Every structure is written in structure tokens, then in C-alpha cells.
Amino acid sequence: MSDVRANRIAEQMKKEIGDILNRKIKDPRVGFVTITDVEVTGDLQQAKVFISVLGDEEEKKESLIGLAKANGFIRAEIGNRIRLRKTPELFFEIDESIEYGNRIETLLRDLDK
Image (cartoon, rainbow, N blue to C red; front, side):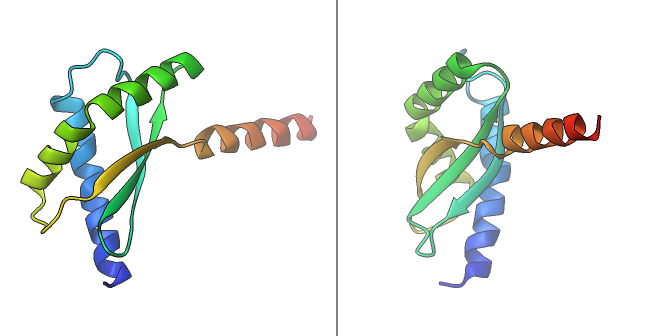
């Protein structure tokens, strides 16, 4: 399987999961969640979905729990929207890169002063 196809499917999944979270998921635990990236394996069997959550650590945990409960629904919606032989299994993870970048930026600003 080519990496180009896996990347195309990952980008399409990123767009569709974001739409599903905004329009279909009504779980109050899933608050301000943003899909930052999706990585699909070469055989298209698994997808790692990176999310960014606005809030503290407790809200991040609650959002992950809510997404885990809605995993089957999200996967079914993806299967309806993207025509694949088998819909990838979804794994949600918190994306720490934005916070890491903000921390580095703060440290660099402090050094400049």
C-alpha cells in the first residue's frame, strides 16, 4: 500500500472526524476538542487520532473517556462517509505538541528579557 494513499485517507478522516465531533456527538464530556492529526497504518487497519482539548487535565481525561465511548459510532460514521473495504480501528490520543511549543516559546521569550 502506498504512503500517498494512506496520507490521503488520513487527511480525509481528519476532516470527517472533525465534522462528526462538531455535528453529531452530543456527549457533554467531549468539550472543545480539535483534531490535530490522523496517522493511518500502511495496511489501513488502524488509525491514531491526535486531539487537542481546551481545558485542564481533568477535562482532557473526560474528553478521552467520551471519545472512547463514542468510538463505535464515529467508526460507523467514517465507514458511511469514506468508502473503504474495512474501516480503520480508531485510537484517540492527546496531542501534547501544541503545549510543548507554547512552553518553548515562553522560555525563549523569558531568555530574551
